[in-house]
Length: 180
Image 1 (cartoon, helix red, strand yellow):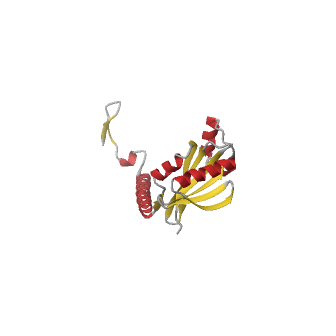
Image 2 (cartoon, rainbow, N blue to C red; image 1 turned 90 degrees about the vertical axis):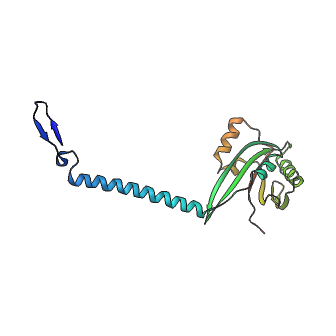
Image 3 (tube, rainbow, N blue to C red; image 1 turned 120 degrees about the vertical axis):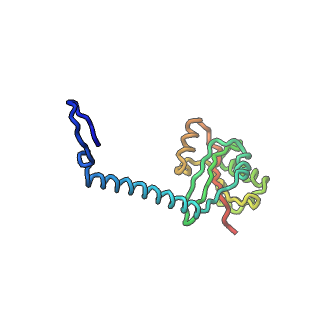
């Protein structure tokens, strides 16, 4: 490369006079190659992982069926990796217009039974499990206790922001039914 200096003299500059010379250029080139290679491999691995992973998610129609039993005060979903699959659990806090927590649990179950859900377990008046063959879904109804939402800080925040009265609300967790 030829340059003209301030006094009109002609100087030749080559790669050896550049700020990055010899080994430095090779090092930069090697680092750039490694970064591009690693980024490319990571993208391919992620895509292959996503293709191999089955996601089990309740249909939107089933979720609407659950929402229809009362006033949805908050909702959220959580994805859990399990072996070669991902299971999505949807969580709702719903006010069904009952006077107490136990009455809300019973009323929720009754409203869902009217929609074709079947009770498969009742451990206490405040905890009922149900399934729907129509929706291929499983759910658990629990009387509202904020401790049961520890893994859902977004729901707790939404309830606090709304100043929602949850004394007679229920928590419903729903997921794809994988039983027999």
